[in-house]
Image (tube, rainbow, N blue to C red; front, side, top):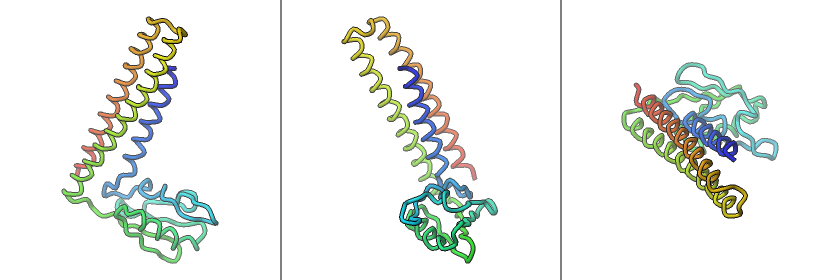
Length: 181
């Protein structure tokens, strides 16, 4: 049961890291666009499945679709994603200049970072609540003793506290990264 909690919490932490990676920080990062969905041959696919994404310089992303007919589709999808990027389509590839962040956009980005951190904590609380329900159910059905239930709850709380500490550290680190000029 505790192993299940650890796995669920690890998934929540991994999701938080992925969300932080997608934030536009004024630097070129393939994570900004690689999961944007495009229609390819009748099905929806992320860009990373249809093109190679590279970094030309700290401010420029390059997308080279394997099928050059997807250039227009990818360009439209990035524009429609409304993430503040303006793709420039060429004959062979797409270039994206990532704009520098202003002080105002940095402050707005810190708010987004805090929101992601809080969302991760809510996810952890939900995992804890689900496991508490399982423990109570097993205790009422006499599958485990009250002492075992108490021990499981204490161990679960230790895991949750550790996860919340990791979330706090990751959030503070990301906030510092955002505010760094």
